[in-house]
Image 1 (cartoon, helix red, strand yellow):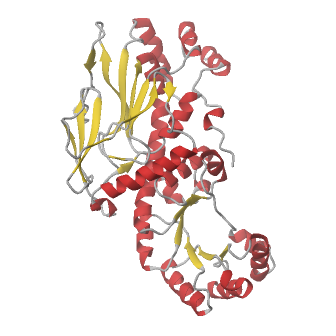
Image 2: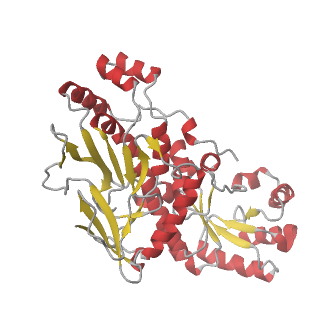
Image 3: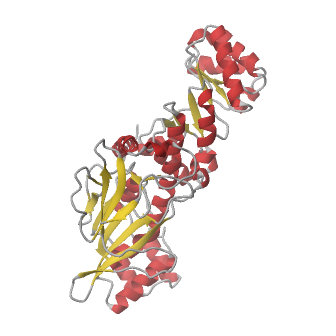
Length: 440
């Protein structure tokens, strides 16, 4: 397995918006560019009806930041098109992030106003990162949040990510990573497997059956090549006939059959009865076909052993973005003292000041509140759990937050945080956030 660091891949510093560089130019002109600042990424709310969100993408963000540079090609483009002036180009040529980054670990649940990521550095450094931070966190957290609901609906049955063909190629690999963090067992995406150390699975599509003169010929070829433990797709023509052919060829060693169309609940029941009657009590049933958390929940009554989920997953199951924003909440004044700042808005709540987050737990270890201290840690909670971890210190990436080991760590964090949240998070019905966010 190739587990070479993802930051060895080229990262374009132009994954950003034009106005971030013009802000830098104007701040350099005013002399404010070197003021120390605190920016926070957070969501003002959850997608309608959702009760929690799951953080994902931080590892990818940190890996990308390690290679976030303005090289000759980027500088030539910016100069040729007149985006910024020569002084700003010179500053960009030397760009290296030298600040601190804190945040919620990947796999952690978040709620409205949770400070998912905190960037502490000069304005010159922090402002450039806005679009990159938000594009990664909004996409990956949306996928992880949808995946978590699907895993919950599956009730312990494995879920397989198979949505690559419904997403842009880079987004597909990122979605696979986010899904595994949120509890998916495997992915069909090989690049995600290579890059992030994920388990990959897959056998054959309908085209493989249609390629051969008969279904028996197709099954025999697959079994001869991949062994009897493979999964045979049995709904190309007639499901019952296909199952009988599969058992005739593979015997009771057949690993699984896959259903990809029709009434999955009824078909799974019929196939289970048929397999059992033929002596294949250990052959599993995999169901696919445009599943989402609602159809997975409905299939709890079916004898399905695992679910393959694609389109709904990689599009966030109706919520393709987490809705996070990146806001300046504190900066130094001319005396070098930090002051809280926030946009004044009639329809958006903005709270200035650097946040410190604790999850309040009751005596049984169940979460009851998201507690945010403004400018200082909240008063000591007898059962409180601090949520913020430091990822980068003085520009140096701290160990454990990137690479394949970070996915394993995040997956464990997701399992722990779900066990800590109140049982309401397992309901698919629309409702308010599972726990309220309060300031202390």
